Amino acid sequence: MFVVIMGAGRVGYLVAKLLESEGHDVTVIEQNSERAQELSLLINGLVIEGDATDPKILEDANIKQADAFAALTGKDDANILACILAKNLNPEIYTALRISNPKNKKIFEQLQDLKKYFNFIISPEEIAAEYISRSITSPGFDRVLFPKEGAEIVRFEVTPESWVAGKSVKELNLPKDSLIVAIYDKKGTLIIPSGDTRLPERGSLIIFAKTGVLDSIKEIFERKKSSE
Image 1: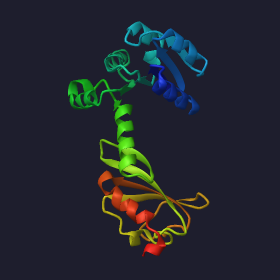
Image 2 (image 1 turned 45 degrees about the vertical axis):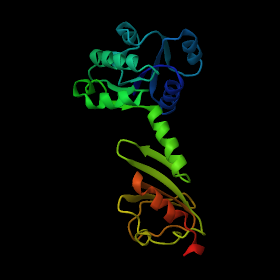
Image 3 (image 1 turned 45 degrees about the horizontal axis):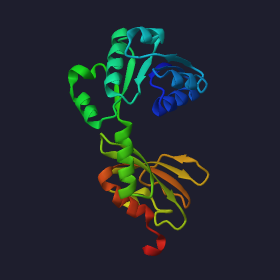
């Protein structure tokens, strides 16, 4: 896949490095000359110094041949305009729009006339705030957030002292808005569980659940055998 990225800040740089590590071709457009020069030494792809809201710069980045365009600067207005221009130059391109102001994100998700220009809208600031908030109010496990759906993927460790160790999934009586999607034994072997699957004495498990039931789930998996 060939991806054009607008913005060489922290987010743009990390996305570029991740895409390259997965074997994708990346071109980055950065307006700041010093940052553009610095980035050219850090990634394998082409770095173009220029303004991605200028159609000529987008064409110089081969936007018409690109599979995806990600506008990742901290400036909402510029990101929005660049995505619209990218779609006009290449109607088949997949566009990812970064919005720093969560209020703007909600507006663009609701306006049908604008949605056609943005395949994916994300607010890293909103996700980070949500993650920190959840980690403070419900600490104790690794998590991946799905803010829009009101759900999370969380990971719990199982030890021989855990109340759940050796029990079957159906014995746990988990809340209805939760599902164990994967279990790993102490050797790291993946098990896709059914109700009769027994949890290992030592290992970990992945749960997909609505945010509202996480406290109940945490109580179950942090319970020790001595507390029965």
